[in-house]
Image (cartoon, rainbow, N blue to C red; front, side, top):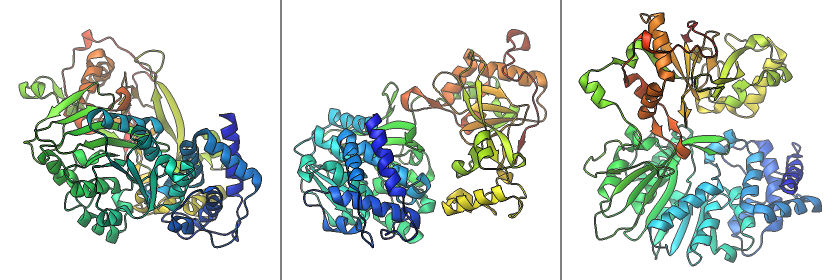
Length: 570
């Protein structure tokens, strides 16, 4: 491990040592000029280690507009990374060069090995071995590698539009026959139109995750047409890839793709849900992996697995990632939203009129979505090192973690950049930080670009009366907020309604922390990966809470006592 870390540091130091006159690669969507010069060095490294018959188009795409000499010590460091775990370390190398914000236009986020292995193993347990595998948005090739190990006789085609990640896979392969993989530098939509498999094929992988807002309107229209009307205009690129593939699936073909889960309930996924329900002779499995971490990205995801056609009727099954909770769904609901295991609406209590609606006591909302946490959220020390004056920072509740017991969470704090009314030229440190953000293209990100001034969050600050953790395995933490900490969208905020008394507030908070209250919260949550549960502001508001009397609830003060107030949500 130490040798790999040292090797990665040596390669990165050389790759990053560029000047404005250094050779560059041709344009790549979302990549800055400086990063293109760094990627030119990476391309030179890859070309030095390509073996076998690498596609000519790939070699050309990795060739910069000038000569790049690679030192022998840097090549030796690259060899160390390849020998240790080529796929993982080469993915780390690319991720270190190109920031997450710059990878979003191409949707380049790498799948952890353990998840890719679980996806392939799960498919193999339920279906016959495919004769061919298409690795969709192949990246550095984690699915290609695992698919070859599982089905060594299968022909594997790795499709990607990004020459750098495909070049990384070419080096990881070592020699194409080793993995029996064909590297294809192509736009998947065009490739899918022009290629017709001749043997039972599995379309496998983690398609590029790009939000619909980042897709060029002309490109998006073309993709929607290729999807055959299965998704609406707000579908992200991953869901479009799924729909395009499903539309092309032959009877003997199958797919297993991990994509964002929004389509399961959103309006843009209605036709896709209807199509999946109509595939009565294909086994359909939806395996929830919400809050799935792809390096820096956290995505609510679902593995969509569609088997080949068989003579008999097949089920639709929805499960959590572990498989501990499962639902078998009927196929008669048409385009209705898919249910999820562990998500109860307490309809019996509502129908019988027991208790009081949570929404009568207060409203729950998510915290501020900054659109660029790396710009807006830092520790006090980090802001001090950037010379950002304290007057432009607001205390922030960053996370709630387990404390001394189930009722006393530990609060992790940070500071949120708050530039309400800030005029450029007022402070040198702030000006420099804004300019650095613009150099990184942060002002072009979707949420930032929607603001009148991309760096000013003042109209979006969320300062609740009570802070609630959104995600939990055992305990949903509940913390009063008398000091007015802001929150971002990894936490929820409760804002009391005007007529709720102090006694009612105290009783509700104690009930939320009680065994019964925690069970009620879990019953309203969606089941996530690794036994986690995620709350939803909407479903919390719909809960019927049967509050005990004050005399039956033991008072627990929590970290900040019973002082409540000062809530503000702009």
